[in-house]
Image (cartoon, each protein chain N blue to C red):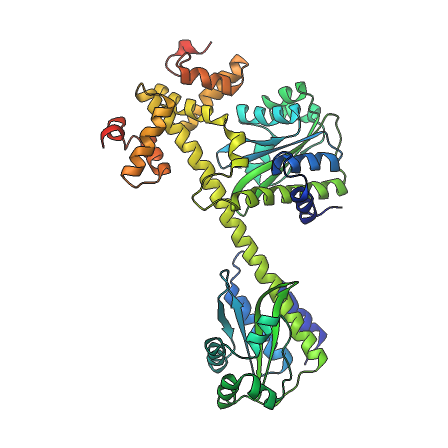
Length: 238
Length: 240
C-alpha cells in the first residue's frame, strides 16, 4: 500500500507540464483505487468553495451539485470532520439529501466516499471519490484512500506555501475558482436588492437556480447583467 | 536502576507528543531530567537550532550547566557544537585532547567543577536540529550501552520536536490558505454590493476599492469588508 509520502513523491515527480498538481493527484487516486473518479474541492466553515480538480464529468457534477444545493456527503464530511462513506447511494441518498441524492444518481454516481481535509480546527478541503456501481471500499482500499486524503492536504498546503503570506491563493488553486467570482458578485448584488445577509443572499441564488434547473453560475451572470432580479419582489420567483 | 519497566515508562512519556497542550520546552526538560536519571550523569542540557538556523540553549537541568552551554555558543567551541556540526556523538574525550580542542570551553568547564562532557545529536536522517550535552563531575566514561540509550532518548525527542514543528507549520499554511480564500470571496461580494448600490461596472467597482485601499493604506480585504458592512460608502470610495 502506498503512503501519503509515496503518493506525494509520485505526483510531484510526474510530468510537470501535464496538468496541475491537484489534477495529477486525483488522476493517480482514480487509477490506484477501485473507483470511477475523484473530485477535490476547497472548503471553509461556510461550506463548499469550489472545485480544484475533477477527473471526469460526473466528478465535476458531484462537486457542482453540492455547491449549488448546499448539501451532500462532502459537506457533511467537512462539517463533522470525518469521512462519509456511502457505498450505495440509491438506497440511502434520497432520504438523506433530498436535493443532492436524485441528481447524483441521475449523473451516474452510485457510491461516494468523502474524506475531509483539515488541519486541527481549520477546514481546508475535501477529497470525494465516486463509483458508477454500488460497492464498498475494503479495509486496504479505505486505508489507501485515507493516504490519498493526507497527500491531497499536503498538496494544497505545499502549493499555498509557495506564496508569500499575504500573496493570495496560489494560481493552481485560484484559477479553478475563477467562475465562482460571478457567484460571489451576484451574492453581493442580491444582498443589497433583497436587503438580506450575504449568507441568505447565496441561499436565494441557489434556490432560484435549483427551481429554474439552471447552473448557479449562469443565473449569477444574469443577476450581474441586471436581466434577472432575485429577491426584489415575489414575482421574480416563478 | 535501569529496570526495563522504568525505561518503557520514560519512552512512553517522551513519545506522548500528540497531546493538545504540547509544550516543546516542557518536553525538553523531561528529556534532560530523564537522561540524568537513566545515564547517572550530573547535568544535561539541550541546544536547538530554530527555524532560522540560530542555535539556542533551550533546556538544562542546572543553572551551572546552562551557563556553560551559553558560554559554549558564545565562544563558538565545545563538544555540543562539534556534535551539532558533524551530526555525530562526541563522547569520552580525554581531558588533554579536550583542552587542546576547546581551550576556552575546557577552562570554564573545569572551573565549574566538571570533569567530563559528552554530546549526542538530535538528528533525523540527514537533518540535525540540535544536540544534548551530558556533564559529569567525575571523569566518567559512557559505555556503548549508555551511548545507545542516550541516542535513543535523543531520537525519540527529535521525532516529537519535528512532528510539533510540522504541525505548527501546516497550521500556519492552512490559515494562510483560508485567509486568501476568504479574502477572494469577500472582495467579489463587495464588488456585487457596489454594483447594486451604484451603476458602476464590476471592473470599476474593483478599481475603486483598490485605489481606496492604496490611498488609505488599508488591506483590500478590509476595504471590501467595510463596503459590505456599509461603513465605507460608494461616495467615500470615489472621493475619500
